[in-house]
Amino acid sequence: MKKYKWLIFVIIGIIIGSIVFLLYPRIKLNNKLIKLESEYTPDVRVYNIISDLSKNVKTTNNVDTSKLGKYDVNVKFKYLFITFKKKYVVEVVDREKPVISLVGSEVGIACPGKEYVDEGATASDNYDGDITDKIKVELGDNKLVYRVSDSSGNTNKIERSIEYKDEESPIIELKGNSTIYLYVGNSYSEPGYTANDNCDGDITDKVKVSNDINTSSTGTYKITYSVTDSNGNNASVERTVVVRKRTVYNTYGDGLVYLTFDDGPSERTREILNILDEEGIKATFFVCGANEYTKRAYNSGHTIALHSNTHNYSYIYASSSNFFEDLTAIDNKVYNVIGIHSKYTRFPGGSSNTISRNYSYGIMTYLTGEVENRGYTYFDWNVDSNDAGSDVYNSDNIYANVINHLSHSKTNIVLMHDSGGHTATVKALRNIIRTAKEYGYSFKAIDSSTPVVHHGVNN
Ligand code: ZN
Image (cartoon, rainbow, N blue to C red; front, side, top):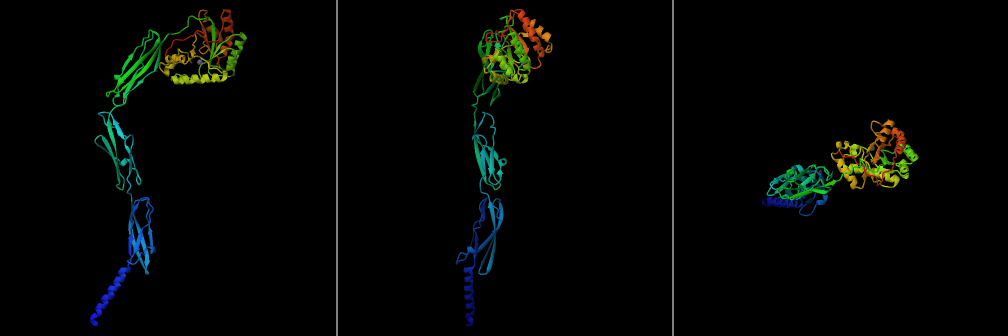
């Protein structure tokens, strides 16, 4: 028997070994690479040959799926009174490509023979955020290739093809107004122009100018400016020149006296209206506002004409759009009070003013034409009471300035003012009227039959 004893030990050993082999648990963690921002639950399997033991497993981990990196997963489970532990290292990874997009169009256009000016691209990554500064651009055959990679090595690319062509027309810009008004006998002087092309740059020197202007005869003429760029694209613009006959009635007319009062209404307007009523005559008010005196004047048969809403030279003479905005504003104020749109106007400073040169060269030449185009008639004056000049407080001089310059052989348009400070004007008014009557003059408010008095334009 002794000789078989070792055999019994061997058999027992094999049996125990087999049992341990059969019962010993095997552990496996299936998900070791974790997608960024995903929900993570360790997928641990524990089993032996006989059965699945996974339900006894407890796991703990410090995985933060919002941050790339390595984390620990600890697995613990009990089986047959023995505690098993195992530690795994898992990794949160980013496998998503960055997104890259072009700024501007997919096809870049460049001038023939010139370099394409890249509009660039932008890139953003789910993990790194804006990575536009990581973009690398390569020039290929008629294309640009933009590549970018994120911090995890995921790459992406985009292409832009480039076409070398020029289909854009040059741009001609006119200096000065697009319509220029001249009087017969004036000479036309070109205010200038520029021409620019997307490919050629400044091509002003290639502009061809043609015109049929004849300043010795009234009419509407065209000046044509045209230019062609080096790739054959054309542009042309026109300017209109209107040659008009000068209408000045300085030395002849209807022999009537038209008293005109600028810059009101004010308290002086009320006093003036009283005098005009008492003397039974009509006059004209070029207003800067409208109130009850305006209404009273209108109802009494005086003419309400437009002067200015702001009377601010630096504003109204800076541009024609400013001027007409201001004129429309006073027109509307008057309309709201008397219910009609007056068609008579007077330029602040008169049409002959030179102050407007400080704000816009040539603007009076334009405005004197344009107010007429818009249906207004403007009046200057040929008898100046000087009540807004050095004689503002001197009623004797105001009286003399008017009386001495009246003439039976002209239309007498008398400039006076009815804004607040003009008490001397009010004081002189009755004597002016009475003396003029004695000299045989009649008075009238401006209407459509009144001969127009215009100054010469100086700007
Ligand atoms: Zn004025």
